[in-house]
Length: 365
Image (cartoon, rainbow, N blue to C red; front, side):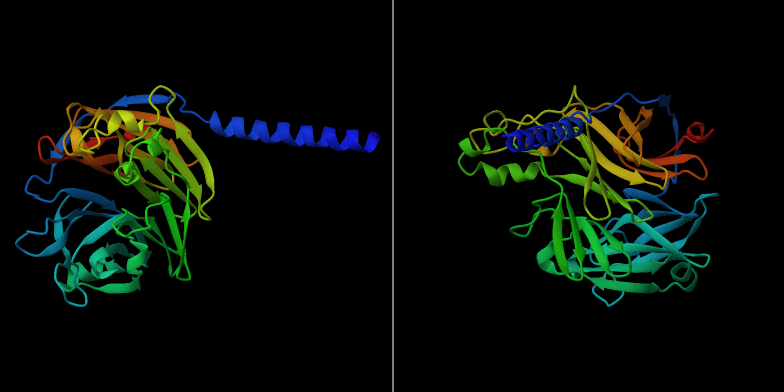
């Protein structure tokens, strides 16, 4: 009898420990930011017609529109003086040309030369462009090239792990993809990590599952040392942190804003999704911080236009998920990139169609 009683007590203790673990994870909610800063910007690169600006070490690169007359992928500037230095990458079908270039923020150095990883999804390849050599020679210098399988649907937010593995986000254009927000390819084998929030009463709406896959939109970034990933949900106030093996280390939800959608409320008679809110737009990361462009805005039917036009916020977390700074921005940003060394944050103000630069040096004093 004593033996069975002991086993019973052990099971109770085990169950209680499991419950405590679950409660601790579920209660990992959003905390207050330590410091709030109001940032004011100045317009920069007035003649630039691109839509995206990125800080890459001592360079700024501006991605050009597909219709750009000089057919270049990036205009490159000195990050200190903002002087134009030249171009890197060409659009086209040639072996060293790009059809759909996408830079996710990953670069490395070869000596004093900076090399950026650029995914060309239509060609199923991610290639490393040496900026210095490309600018000085006028010919695109490719240092490395890796292929990715079409079935993996690694269209954007793609990163290189080590020398040949990959990690990225699947937009879901290929059947059976975008089941998880983080996908890691090791030795050609892909595995998914993390979970998307569920839609309430999804099963009660005929064929609703496919429609609700449109809610699976995220921004994904990798820490420069390749040890961590961050996922920011577009339609949920949720930010998830993973280690480089894909294990979820923290999930941060704002208790006032986070909620699950109800299928009966967001799918109209024409099977269009309505009544959504957009929360996280995009991310930039450094070794120190995660910079998350945050909206919390109503979205027009179909997710095309905003009903509300208002200033933006940048939420700044450390890599343990602790809220550090809240940057209040008066402009309607659609992208951002951070130069911590010089104390600048860059962004594209979509309402005015201009590049802006903001002084964030107070964060580092």
